[in-house]
Picture (tube, helix red, strand yellow):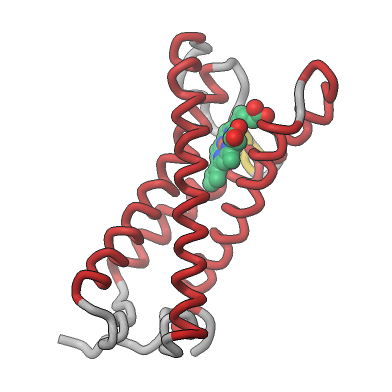
Length: 182
Ligand code: HEM
């Protein structure tokens, strides 16, 4: 068996930080548009914001496939020996839940848009093929799923960031560095 590396590969690091940037930007735009803008008073500005939210978020769908492929085909650093077994198990479960959410959020977002009769655009370049017809009943189900999932994802990401900071500043181990340096 090959020895586990001390650092993630440059590709894994790039995918991690790129997706973190996209996730956080899409989250704040979605949150702002969903909770502070209305069609009645903000009209076209709300449309612009939702369009930006979609264009920024959809690349996650492509990146997560590459990322999971990379995760399975490359060795990753081990968690520090100072961590207890239960803590290591919790960390692993949270990482897989994060991957799952990064798949589910863009999928529910696209289903939400299509069911409402709108496209799912990617980086202002092209639209994803529309897989379902407009459907009010489906929209009524999928909209709250996207919203609650986004809230759950936001909480998990905050926990993930706090854990990374704890590793770096309190435990003073290699966990955060393994995702930054080489
Ligand atoms: C990483 C991916 C994504 C994240 C983190 C995310 C996050 C969010 C958040 C936080 C909200 C606001 C929830 C609230 O009202 O409190 C939202 C709303 C929304 N999202 Fe997403 N989303 C993602 C992907 C997508 C995608 C790919 C689409 C469609 C192609 C989409 C379509 C929408 C729409 C239409 C709304 C409603 C906005 C409004 O009512 O103004 N989302 N999303």
